[in-house]
Image (cartoon, rainbow, N blue to C red; front, side, top):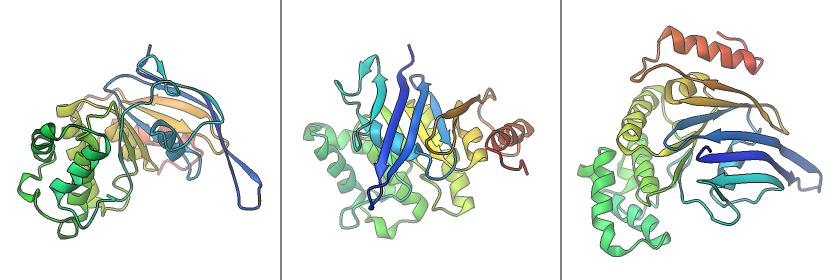
Length: 251
């Protein structure tokens, strides 16, 4: 059995006037342990909703989620979450932001120092551990956000368009860095994106969401060895395949 299995997931929201807005209309997909999977689809189709359900921030209206063979309802999964913006506490240093995450998860203080040292080193910020977020660049802040998500030792790393607010040069560097971190740390990753080329560059598989109420239109395996080059013709071909499946022009 796959590590994460999502079966027939439904979710409906209500607008301010009471009108129901079905977002997930029976989403089903799986993720293997230590696999890097991307969720790609139109804006508002429920990709972030799936992450929020996994993180325990929302309930479902139907369907089933199992992680490691256990129902999410019975045994909540330990998730680390990286958002579009870093959401760091600006009045706390890098070290203190990581302490805050561990305190919230009731991790023993005796482990804090070793965990901080490990993950600031992993993201390449050991020289900046006593700095405040506002003194760091946008890319560095997202590195801190990744370290904060990993320091709690999550079962699944959830990433919701974490590079969408960065300039393209910084975003390219961060994609390379994320893959380096993933190769060293080997977490199960679920990464939301609107960027088809980003998806095929990063992922082992890409799950394509349709318009809401969404289902999975197609799963695209990316059978291209790493380290990948962003201009690899095979990646470009997969990008065009994905855009075609979404009804968008391939160029």
